[in-house]
Length: 171
Image 1 (cartoon, one colour):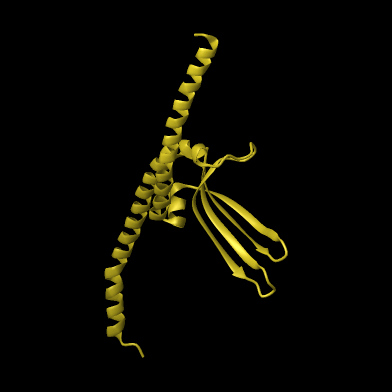
Image 2 (tube, helix red, strand yellow):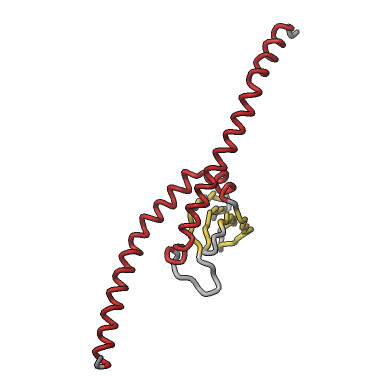
C-alpha cells in the first residue's frame, strides 16, 4: 500500500523538476539552432571548394565532398558478409545529403537498398553532431593547403608557357 506521504513527496519533486525539464528542452533547442547557424555559414564558404576537393568524376556525376563516412560489415554464417554504409555528403550545389546503403557479399556484391535524404544543417547536427562535422571539415581544410600550392605551381607554369609562346611568335 502506498502512503499519502510518499505520493505527496513524489508530486512535490515532480512539481519542482517539471519547469527545469522545459527549460532544459528550450536550451537544447536554442543550442541546436545556433549550431545550425554556424554550420550554414561554414557550408556556404566551403561549397565553392567542393569541385576542387573532389576527385574528377565522369560528366554525369555530381561533385560531392564526403564529410562523414561510416561502414560496418557483419559476417554471415553462410560465408560472405552483410554490410552497410552511411555518409554525409556536401554537393557542389550546396545540398547536404545523408546517403545510406546496405547489402551483402557472398559470391558477388549486391546492394539491397540505397537511400539519399537531403538534410538541413539542423538535421545533420542531430544525426552526426556539430563537433564531428567540424572535425571532418577541419581535416578537409588542412588538405586544401595542397590546392593552394598546386594553384601557385599552375600559375607559374602558365607564366612560363605564355613567355614561350610569346618568344615563338616573336613578340
